Image (cartoon, rainbow, N blue to C red):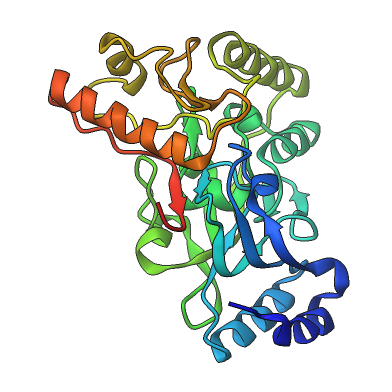
Length: 304
């Protein structure tokens, strides 16, 4: 559908740099795949976000809100309607004593480094997780024994009525790769953490050591969405996939990583369809061979 009649309205709200037409989603996902979005809107403030969503709703334009695209698989056919991307401009971090307030678009590594510089500890595990705070809070991202919820005191959200609310972390129903935002349709605008004091050098050493372990064990040289599947109870997705002989299995340009079977990678020329079909194949083989149902961590957008 053609949304050119709305372009001028969005430019008046966001400026020309905040409005893009037929924007390739491959430029906005870590898989580096995906067709064009009819419209991409890039608000830099909460007020701009509210204004944009009011227009989209008033005009019945379908839309999806994303962050930095680190956990998304977007259809090769692209996305109809609008993609609202929260990143630059909504990425501030402020520290007051032990309290850290961060906006949705701040990359996790930048957040981790800011807290370390402030002499605070606890977020070192997040220093190598791709993506930004909003998506990490939404899915309670974690690694190496840490999760986003661990030191979180509150979350700033926009609810389905476009009202902005501060919600205590205890009411967000955080669990493994889950939060109440998934059920209630909240848009994550930011979060507040209460972090213990730490030694900056020790924290930096810890983050660097965890990142070195990532580089050693994970296929970071290739586009991916990180771990493709959630960890099944009592087991590990990568171990199950490897036990089924699927390491290196390829469909088109998508491959089960030879370095870590828990990752599906884009070897350079993959289409989203290749990745999607490989996910389905892995699920089918693992279920047949082990009886375990693997659940993707990756969020799929568009028609597959």
